Amino acid sequence: FRTNTAGREIMKNKFVGLGEVLWDLLPERTCLGGAPANFAYITTLMGDQGIVASRVGEDSRGLEALRRMEELGLDIEHVQTDRQRPTGTVKVELDGAGVARFDIAHPVAWDSLEWNSDWQHLAEKADAVCFGSLAQRSEESRSTIRRFLGATAPGAVRIFDVNLRQSYYSHEILADSMRLADIVKLNDEELPKIMNLGGLPHKDELSSAQRLIGAYDLKMVCITRGSRGSLLARGKDSSEHPGFRVHVADTVGSGDAFTAGLVHEYLQGASLGLMNEVANLVGAWVASEAGAMPSPKRGALEHSLAEIR
Image (cartoon, rainbow, N blue to C red; front, side, top):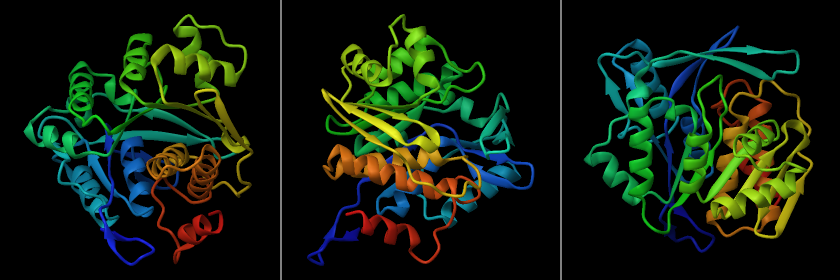
C-alpha cells in the first residue's frame, strides 16, 4: 500500500514486466537488466508494485538475479527457473556518447517462458503489463506472452515496448503485438523500420504515429528521440518534449524508465504534457546513472518528480 494526501492507504497498482531478465555485461561492470525487469523496477520506485514475470537459469547468475531483484524491492514470486538453459546475458558495447550496442546470448532461460496457473492468476490481477519484441524470438515464449495478455482483465493497460534487437523481430511479431496493445512505445530509429515492414508510408513522426493508432486501434503511441526528448500521440492530440540535459553515464535502461514513468502517469489520468514531462525526467535520471536499475540517492528522484507537479 501507499498513502495518499489524506493519509489513507490506497492499493498500489500492479505493474508486470513480462519477458526477459538478463545480465548486461558492460566493459567495466555487470548490471542486472532486461527491459521488462527495468520497467518493473522503476515503477516500484514510483510507488507502484513492480512484478517480474520472467525465467532464469538454475545457475549462479540466476540465483544472483533473484537475490538482486528482491533486494531492489521487486516481487519475484512469479520468476520461473530453468534447469536446462542458462540465465540470459547480453554483451554491451558503449560508444563515445554512452549509447549502447548489444550482443544477446541465445538460447537462454527466458526463451522458455511457461504458461501455468500462477501466471494465469497474475495476468488477471495486473493493472498494467509491459512486454516487448525480444522475448518473442522463440515460439514457446511468444505463445506464453500472447496467452498472458489474453488473460488480463478488461481494464488492464497493455504496453508494447518495441525493442528491435539484432534479427529478433519480424513484421508478424510486431503487427500481432501492436494489435494486442493499448500503448506502443518505440524510438525514432525504429519507427521508419516498422512503417516500412508494414507497408505504411512514413512522412513524419506525428503522421506515422497517428497512422499506427488508426491501423491497430491504439490508445497512444510514444516515440522517444534520445537526448532530444519525445513525442506522444493520442487520437488527434499530441505532445512534444525537448528532453532534459544530463551528463550521460550510459543509456542502458533509460527507455524502459521512460516507459515506466509514462504508464505510471497514464494510470493516474495525467495529461499528455505531464505524462511526457515525467517520462522524460525518469528516463534522463537513469541515463545519468550507471546501469539500468540505479539506486536513487536520498529521495532525489521523488524530489524531482514533486517539483514538476
